Image (tube, rainbow, N blue to C red; front, top):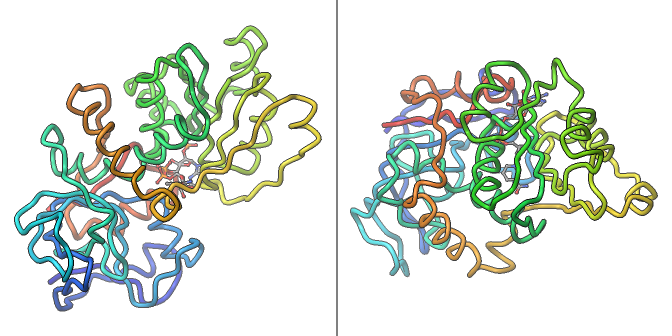
Length: 327
Ligand SMILES: NC(=O)c1ccc[n+]([C@@H]2O[C@H](COP(=O)([O-])OP(=O)(O)OC[C@H]3O[C@@H](n4cnc5c(N)ncnc54)[C@H](OP(=O)(O)O)[C@@H]3O)[C@@H](O)[C@H]2O)c1
């Protein structure tokens, strides 16, 4: 079968190689799938660079999120059968950027009928992260103001939709006019192009000086530091990621004097710490997708040959929504 492989670490375009390898066999608790769709995620970029918290052994095939048709199940798998259309995480070193991939049965779910293969391939990480961040960690309430950074991106686009579905007023921050169009189309009430406007001033003006109740930050660095200037009394800043490349430090005296909370979010940890919460979240999200209140925005459907280019453009901040390999 064809698979993209990383044998040495570096920028995606330099280290991803399309090779022919044997189809992977599922071990106990795993399933093998024919890949129907695989969405590119920032962790794929970070893994190519060797900068992610998970460091798969070399060589590995990236593709941490996918939709596939089950072709074989390993020992002990009882909840999923051959022929099922499923979505979830790729089990590296055999991730989704290949004709066939492996998945862990415990983190694999039925793909919603309301979503195409491409959409279903982007319905796991960004939406689960948004759900846990906004509801479980930040306790977002209807009527509150939610500020989303990198709002046209994969994680950000899901956060806009989930924020609107929760009844929040959503402000999106993006880099560039084309991305601003995307954030508006996703439902953001106010969109700020960070290249042309100071988001702190716009948020203050839009909230009568109060600031945002919840700030969803997948970018970090200076973006986090500026966010502390427009967080409301008893507001919550969600530390979601560091796509900007800088890991910030927090001034705790500032959090004290302004009465705001800084909430870390590592969605992947819930699978180990509270396994029941992941299928419960998938059920809630599936119902929302069926009702039409959320839907992954897949901006580009790539052939397998185009995957390295797509992952590199994600690394360069040049994509919107999700770019996905579709078989
Ligand atoms: N905490 C968790 O459990 C969790 C789960 C999933 C993902 N994440 C994290 O969430 C972040 C977003 O992931 P994603 O896959 O959805 O990516 P993405 O948001 O689609 O792409 C990253 C975006 O970040 C912005 N950005 C700002 N500075 C950048 C820079 N120097 N280089 C590249 N992009 C830059 C760009 O948007 P603008 O131009 O609009 O600013 C870019 O489009 C990543 O850090 C990822 O690791 C965390």
